Length: 443
Image (cartoon, rainbow, N blue to C red; front, top):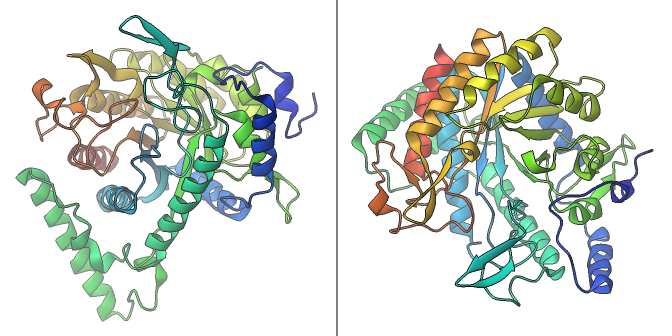
C-alpha cells in the first residue's frame, strides 16, 4: 500500500487507547494539525548526519531521560537539571573517550507508555492501565483512567515549552565550557565520583585556558559555549504523531515534527503493523527496541522496511535484552556483521533488568553495568561498532535503582521513589556509568 499520513489506519495498531467520545477525539486531532511544528526538518537532517558518524565510530550516541514525562512534575528546574546532567555525562564520555557525543533526550514528548496489560487491579477494583499523561492519569480512579483526547493538547504545549527552554539553555551560556565547574548538580555526595569529576573539569579548564592563549575563546567560537540537545520519544500514540507530521517545503519529504528522533518499542515493532508502516514514511532518524526475542532476520527485515536505501544515521537498533540474556546477542551480531549495514547499534540496559523488590519496580546498578559491558565486548568481538547508550535517568536525587557507589539499598527505595512508571538512574548513578563507559571507549 502506498504511504500517506493516514495509511497507518489500514494496519493493526497495538497499544492504542479507546476514546469514548469519537467526535471530541477528531476535533482535537484536527486542531493539532493546525499547530506549528515542534521541530524543523532541517534539525532532523542535522541529527541524521550526526548519527551517521556513530555508524563509523567517529561519534557516540548518548540518549536518555525520563521513563515518562509528567504533567505534574513539569517545571524549569527539572528541565535545567536534566540538561546539566546531559552536559556532565557528555563531557565525561567525550573527554574520556575522545569522540564527539551526540546528545538525544527523552524529553519534550515522552508522554505515552506501552503496557503489558490493558487493565490494572487494586483491592479488587479493576481499571484501565495508566498509559502516560498524554492519554490518562496516574490516579487510580475510574474517571482518571479514561482516555481523554484533550491531554494531547497539554502534551503539545508542555513539549513546546520544554523545547524552548532546552534551546535557550543550549545557546544562553549554561553550556559554556568555561562554566564547567558550575554544572555540578549539587548533591553528588560520593567523594570518588566528586573527585573524578573535579579532576576532569580541571583538565578541561586547562585545555580551555590553552585555547584562549591561542586566541580561541567562547566569544569568537560558538562551539565552546553552545551544545545542541536533540529530542526523542517513543512514537506510540499514532494519531498524535500523524497530526504533527508535515511536508518539508525544501525537500518535499514528510517529517514527524513532534521530535527529532522517534523510536518503535519492542511491543509494537511488528513488520506489518501500523507503527512500522507509519515511521517508514517519515524521514526522521528512527530507533527500534530489540529484545532477546529477536533474531538477525528480524533486524534485517526491519532495516529493509525502515531504511531501504541503507542511509547512514537513519536507523538506530536499540538492544534491550537484560544482563542474563545479553549473550543471545552474539549470534545476532555474527549474522549482522556479514551484511555490513549502516546501522547505529546502541544498548538500553534498563528495560531488560526490571524486577520487583518490596513491592517496588527497581533495577540493580550491577545488572545495568553488566549488560553494557557485555554488549560492548560482544560487539567488538564481531566487528560491530558499539554506537551508543540509552538510559532512563533523571537529574533528581531519587532512590529508584539499587546499588552503585552511592549505595541505594532496598530500604532506601521508599525514601524518594517518584517515578510513575519505570525506575530511573539518579544523577550519581548516571555519572558513575558515564565514567565506566568512558573506560570502555578508551579500550
